Length: 258
Image (spheres, rainbow, N blue to C red):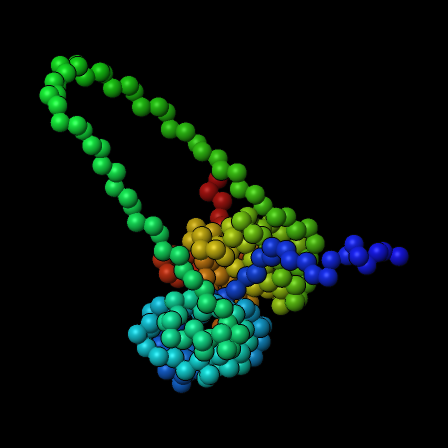
């Protein structure tokens, strides 16, 4: 039997938690409720109890009814855990709801360095002849070491896989109700039928590739698109890619140019 004295009563480890970012541009509860209704089409499991960080920077000059706002999000399958850019007078109310205050660090201002020269007679040196500029080096191909998480088994409904700081490569089907997330790009060499979120930490260059694209939802750097009205008509027998085009999701076939 293991000695109970050698077993710690509690252990704390670093863990990665993926959270939905909610940026509020309205303070009116009815307006927000209508927007959520339109977004989710009334589906109670659209967000599936996702953790959420609420950003109120855009409406910092308006007061919010937190007693009504938090239950509204929970009723729509969102589980708020923190608030970003909250007014200091709201901190107590937020903590009473069990929310954390997400402090956004501001970048340090640049510090100017002044070189002080003591007063003295300065003799300017004779100008040297300008050297002949050296020829520019040939362009180089820079290969970045981009790690990847490889999954060789089907991703079941209700399962969530997150590739932190890496691309995600899946060689089997991603079933409906599954969720695959990557800070980089997502490559699925099989049907993609669940939810795929690439560029999870804000990488707008990330993409989603799949041999067969039948997703419930795709997202690049927090911008998402659903397909309740069907998937776009694309060329048959070609892999499909999802990428950002400005602020909108673009879906297109991957065609060989050879």
